[in-house]
Image (cartoon, rainbow over all chains, first blue to last red; front, side, top):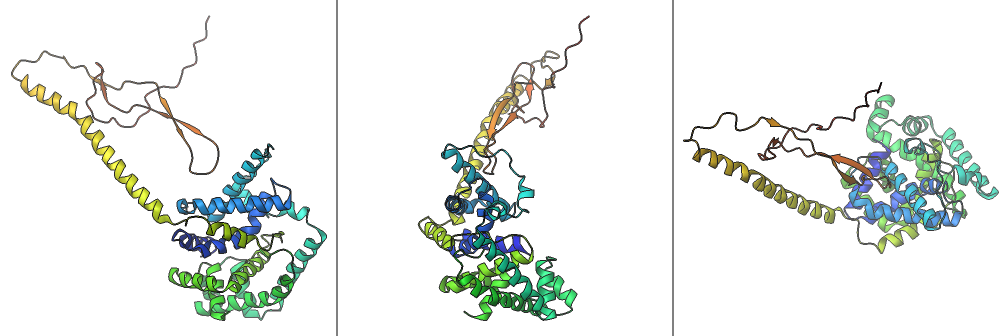
Length: 198
Length: 189
């Protein structure tokens, strides 16, 4: 179980007409998608518009998504095609140095935007990273182990339960408590942010 | 914002929530915008721990703007597509039935004729051996399912069994490539 299962569950709900499920997909992937588009479109505001168009296209095509590929791989293709079409419609030429999808989905989508980030954004990024890692370090051992096995090692709840010799329900609760502790530290940090959290 | 619902959000992130629970959770998210914001912060923390993504600046209203645009769209329900697929499937089945009927008719007529002539002694070797007659391939231009702009030309070969006199018995030959690749010309002396 993991990211893809979570995405497929949401896609299924969208296909059944539940728009809120699409909202969760947008919130999950907005930064990655904007990061991908920033490889083609350098202006920040224009980048957001193209990303919005890409999500709209994805929504319209959602009924045809059958889960043959991962949702993000599919979304990535839509985002790159939307960005290229946008450039062509503006009379600009899309860059020739395309990255293979398999490599690109693994890459940090925000590389270019990060390079052009304002000092404010860069400071915010550093603060977020420090807060998250410091909070994880301060977690009680059982919560820290559970969240690390899940996020870093990518184990399922069942595998974690086996490793930690506890019921699956306990694993679920420990992971949630770890996330909640991190969230409690992030919330005030992001409350004043001029940009949203990914 | 209930702790139980946030725990369900966390389980959904990990793909550990049942379909039914997901349905109920989405209703709760609809009623409480705070849950959607928790979801985005959970995603941020997850991305940072996995060292997957950096903090990419995004307009704080981005998701809301997308959803406003989505709300103006017709629902992305799969029902319409399913109905179209069902109707399409029916149309294909009907077309196949018609083709099979038309294709088999000459064979039936031929067999009737051969019964009528059966009394007459047949001339030996009137019917030549079956051969597969190659014909030039035509090309289907197929658009892949992805959004790529590449158009692929696929050669299509006639798979029908033909007699040397050009008649067709109506049966389908096994799918084989009938055209040999071009040979290099022999060197001239």
